[in-house]
Image 1 (cartoon, helix red, strand yellow):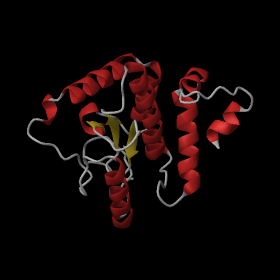
Image 2 (cartoon, rainbow, N blue to C red):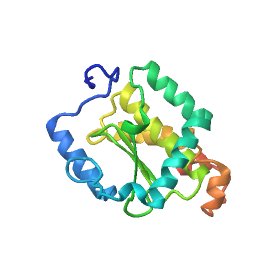
Image 3 (cartoon, one colour):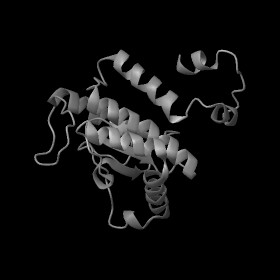
Image 4 (tube, rainbow, N blue to C red):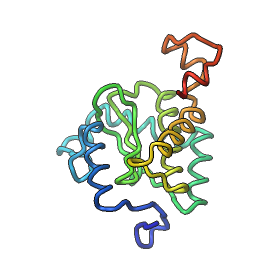
Length: 185
């Protein structure tokens, strides 16, 4: 595991081939990202209402959500302290994606054009922090080991509230019998 010198972080660095593969994947989903893995921003990007709303909802989630606080503390104790300015990015995304964990930069991307309310932001941040925790603690091989990816997705869906009855009803999925098996398959 390699991190920034003196930062106290223990984020794993992928090989050069893995980095290129991860950057290509992140550019397909997070449209503001260039091949460098960072958002492309214009001079006035910080003045847009979507970005300000996303930043405010993120701050609220980080300050008030007990699951997020627990995950941040667990990551800190695992040697992967999370810093808002470094590890979170509010960006426009393609499709219906709400967020993602960009393993190439160890950054959580929050899709400001698709997150509409505080509850949704809390679920997305919790879900993506679980991926970040797995990346830090378990050194997940995101792009070549399907089992690692599946395990992290199942954990994130179960622990973030994605599989809750209320969320499934909003998605118009009303089945109660074997709900968990269907959701995670």
